[in-house]
Image: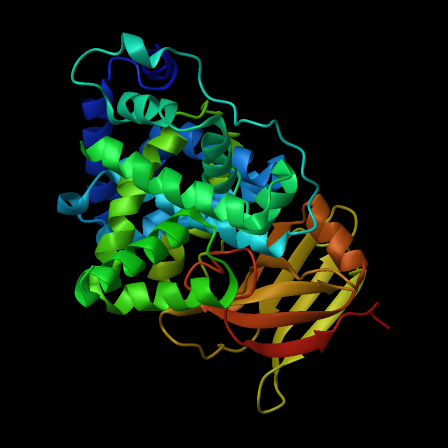
Length: 194
Length: 223
């Protein structure tokens, strides 16, 4: 199962909750301006964020530049993270995605070279223990969406594509793409919260 | 649907567009500002962020190059505590540079390029020397540069037809030097001017100038 594979490679001995707790603790130490905490956070979350940035930006050099910006911002904003408002990993992912979206906006001329569906770590969500991890639950909810809805959602979230670009990439009318994405998002939420 | 519920639903759709990244341009900038001032809007966006984050977590991780950590630390001035202690002790106010390497400058007899940056009253503020072999930049500040306490001056090469390239954070007094990487060497070779901008402490967090450009000077072969 992919979560375990990820843990083995990057966070040996940690389950998902421990990884979240470790991330929160490191953010607290970053907020307290402990330089060593930034190094540890880079080891813990760097591979996740760099994997995301390489998928979104498609150019290794640009992803490297973005990762530097992201960790500079994490250090500068660590004091703003509020544990009671949600996952620390989601907070880090937000910083990385918004930086990538900014860079994509500046690099619109970059060639579009990507597989139809973003690469995910191998695994089988059905084998997840109960209760499922947020990621396993998401997999199940995604599986309820149509293939077109999944592709459009992932083009937007993972590849940072606009509605117009997704319309061109998939060959579907703009209005259809917008509708698919909107319905997919709210169906996903309904499933996640059910 | 009641007006209040309809309004809330519309806000939620906007928040979803923002978090997904499909909201662009001016609308995105406006939403960001709105989020900064409205608890409701911030909460709606945060909820989507939390729910969609697993889409990113499921991607295959990629180990970043270890060298990036050192660059991040330099940008944040988190390295070289010995130097920092020394500089602090001497109260020179020398810059904890993001890019500038510390230690005595190794000079060639004559620089290959030179820029003299004068301050607002016409006095020399910085002398910028570029050496080709070995590729090195030396910046000297003979007089104390006045700057806001929470800001730094950052030096930029201005290559023709290309974005500015950071050369590092400037010392406010004294001298500092750095080795030039390939991108900096190429940018300098195509530049006839350098610029200085005011940036957050430690240098621009984005790799691009974010503050006002306060000085521009010619870069030329010394004559």
